Amino acid sequence: MEKILEVLFSGASIGAIYALIALGFVLIFKSTGILNFAQGELCMIGAFICYQFATLLNIPYILSFLIAIALGALLGSLIDLLFFRRLVGEPIYSTIMVTVGLGSILTCFSGLIWGHDVYALRSPFMNKTVSAGGMIFSQASLYTIGISILLFALFILFFNRSLLGVALKGTAEDSDTAGLMGINVKKMHMIIWAIGSTVAVVAGVFLAEQSFVQTSMSHTGIKAMSAAILGGMESLPGAIIGGFIVGIVESFAANYLSGLEMAGFHFGDIKDVVAFAIMIIVLMIRPHGIFGKEEVKRV
Amino acid sequence: MLKITNLETTYKDIILALKGISLEVPPAKIVTLLGANGAGKTTTINTVSGIRKTLDLTLEDGTIEFEGEIINEKEPYDVVARGILQVPEGRKVFAELTVDENIIIGSYTLTDRNKFSEGKNSVSGYFPVLKERGKQLAGYLSGGEQQMLVIARALMAEPKLIMMDEPSLGLAPLLVKEIFGIISRINSQEDVAILLVEQNANVALSIAHHGYILETGRIVMEGPSEVLREDRDIREFYLGLTEVGTKKSYREVKHYKRRKRWLS
Image 1 (cartoon, helix red, strand yellow):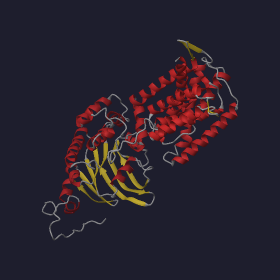
Image 2: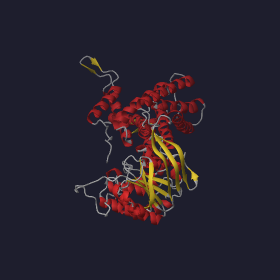
Image 3: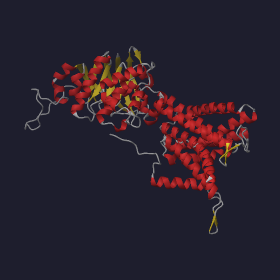
């Protein structure tokens, strides 16, 4: 029982990271119609920025985290300003290719700046654990889950209660009509890119906290995308729940299925396969994802 | 207030949708722009609103003047900030948002947030049904309620001029009458000018002060509503009446088609 809880917990902490990245995917996709394949790279850049300030420059962790968030938001708005402002409404395959290209450029640059090695982020939660009722949790996981849930709550409040949040939702649904309401659509797209990039940066810092800082961190992006699709590409709660599902399933697979042998076949590292298998099955039953729905249409 | 002079707009760089139209909306008056499908009515107000890029419209010539200032090249949000609100055709509510959220979006340009609840109260005065449905998704409202919602949404921004694109579209005659009654009340009570784009000439001329007839990108006739209502051609082609004033019957054996007296 304790083992199950521990596995669930570590799954939830990686799931929170997926959920954060997936949230960025969904926000950007819903508002601008762009499927951002560079989301994982943004997450990696975030981790490197935080590493630069916390480990290399010895600036207090919290401050480095805040700097990483600010620079992440700046990077997101810059990406919108330079590339995607011109590409809104263009065919989805061309925008996807631009994001893929952008992703590899970002990887290349961070490789140039920081190198391709594996680095450790200096953080107050490194290698510390909390034990409760005979179970051991890492402090980094606790912290990840706590802050993520706080962020999700803030987002839900922001999008349902604030004028800007509601305006962003409206722009996401119908940007032409939003323009007719006096909303500056370009500005909204920029804000969405900033938010989407910020959540990726936060996820990157959390991920670095639990493992290491390295350029291959960007592969988390594709898992997070499967989480977003699983939840239904258009739904914010869907992205969050999808992220947690993928993380928890992965964690269970890693603990109970990895290294399993059956009739002479060796499963090997099965955790990545299970996450995608679940996604395929869910999509076969519900092609729009768990929370996705076919459009509400009235003519 | 709004003064359009010799406006020429092309569609997809090749079709001249507006061939130099001029019209004027005086403050606090209802002006109607009548015409059949494809006459260029919606193009006219979209050109004014500035949402040309996504629709592939280009303003080639002429000026749009609002309160003495030329607003030809303004972005849509800038046009709204000046007090020109468009109520788009086909009830473009934000279907995934609740009725209340739609109304909040309408108030986006309101800089003085204290005026929000005041505006909301006055809007619920005109459309009590929206208050009851506040928490529902706008996509699930009936057609009439959606039309009321888009008008309410535009009112929230405290506009000086509302451009309404076919508010009667696809609504039952009784509902059309109700909504036009409310439009007329809004015009007199809120002191807001209305440019009413319509196909339903009968009901539009009943509340408008002045009217323009648009045919294939040209204004072919204009005048005060009373004058237009009495014009023989308009009675025949837009109101469907005969010279004696009765409804035209196609059962009569002899039926000569009258030619329009204007060139279009």
